[in-house]
Image 1: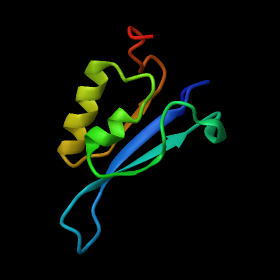
Image 2: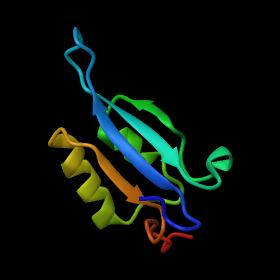
Image 3: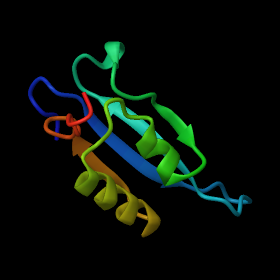
Image 4: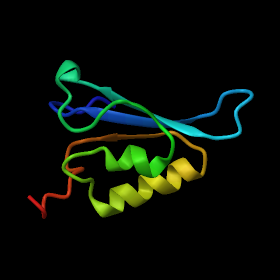
Length: 89
């Protein structure tokens, strides 16, 4: 899924065997993987926290699709190409 010149994102729900809470792991792939400027990879307590780490903010329709998918317990992958809402910039 690597997009030419744009980073790709994967967010996955993770649940440890003895843990009742689901957490959400955010990965960044692609060039420049070492110079990620748009979000902070890591583990988040809620899908909303993972989505809110993006600067600038994600487009609202993409944000809603991400949240629905994660709340359904599924991974989501998307490109940062055309992912941002640039109206506030």
